Image (cartoon, rainbow, N blue to C red; front, side):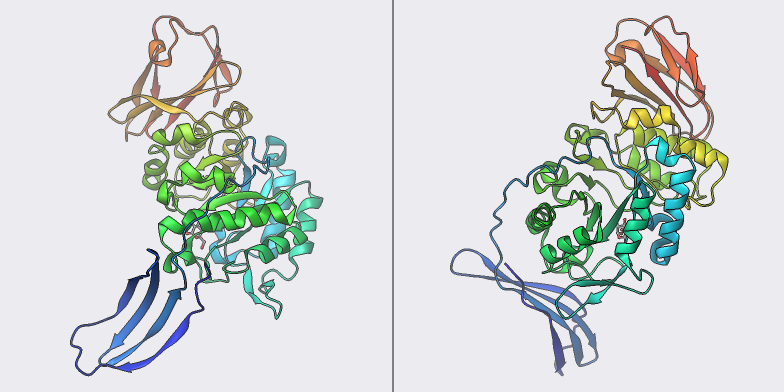
Length: 430
Ligand code: GLA
C-alpha cells in the first residue's frame, strides 16, 4: 500500500518529439489480479529536454475500510480560531500566543470559543528518526501548547496525508502514527488534515483509506484530538467522514472574505443537513468575520447562517485588534446558542422567493431558530408563514437574536423589512 519514493527523472533527449509533453500524466497498468499499478509523471519539456518526477504506486490498493471508533469529541460544533484566513504563511509563535491572550480576555472564551488552531506553515523537515520538526517561526511547540493550555484554551495543528501541504511544507505521508504520537506529546487537541499534497499520489477513491489511517493513528496516540477533514467536499465525504473518525469535514473549496464567496458557500449547504449530528459536522469553512471584505450586516448574515448550519465557528480575524461591532458579532451568545444547540440538527431552507430565503433549525427544546435572509442589494420585505414551519398558528413567544428583544406575533405569518445583504434571526418557542 506504500507508494515507492519519488525518483527524479533524468534528462531525456527526445529529438523526434514535436508535441509538448509538459504536464501531469497518469499511466495505469493492469495487473494479473485485477488491480492496477499506477505511475504518475510530472513532466516539463523545453525543446528536446524533458525533466520532472515520476512516482509509482506499488499496489493499487484494495481499500479495507473499517469504522474508526468515535473519539467522543465535538458533541456540539467546534468553536475557536484558525490562523489561515488572516495570517496565511505569516503565523508564528507570537501571533498564536497573542490570539490566546485575546480570546481568554475579550469575552470569546466565555462565549464558548476554545481552540486556537495553527494552520499550514509551521512545519520543517524530519529529523534522523523521522520525527516532524517545526520551523523557526515555532521554536518550541510543546511550550506553546502549554502556554495556550495555561489560558484555559486548547490548541490545534495542521497536516496533510500527502508528502507536502498546500503551502509546500512537510506532510504526514508515511509518518502518520509517528506524527500523531508527536502531536499527543506536544499536547495538541485538534488536527486539520488537508488533502492537498496527496492528490498527486492518490485518487479520490483512495481518500477514505488515507483519512482512516490518521483516524486510527490519532486514537492510538491516546490523547483526545479533534479530527477535522479538509478535502474540499470531494468524494461525498459526508457519507464516510464520521466512519474514519472525523469530527468535521469541509464541504467546499476555500472561503474568501467576500459576499459572493461567503453566500455561494453558505446558501449551498441545504442538502447536506442530514449528515450533521453531535460528534461530526459539515464544515463550510472558517469565518471571515472582521477581516474587512464585508460590512457588518454581511458579517451578521455570515454568523447567522453558520449558526443555522451548525457549522464549526472558527474565527479567522486578528483577535488582538477588532472593532467592538465585530467582537459583538462573534460573541452574540443568543446566536451562538443556536449554533451550539445540543440537538445538533443542521438547519434547512424552508422558503425562497427571488433573493429572499427563509431557513429554519429545529432546537432541542422544541423551538426553532428562523433566519430571514435578504441576499438582494436593496432592503426587502420577507415573510415567514407558520405553516411553512409546520406549526398551525403564531408561536407563543419569539425573540430577535440580534436586537435582543422579544417580539409579539399573531396571525398566520410574520413579515419584516430586512436590510440589503442582511438577516433577521429569530428564535420561536415550541
Ligand atoms: C487549503 C485549505 C485552507 C488552508 C490552506 C493552507 O487551501 O483548504 O483552509 O488550510 O490549504 O495551505
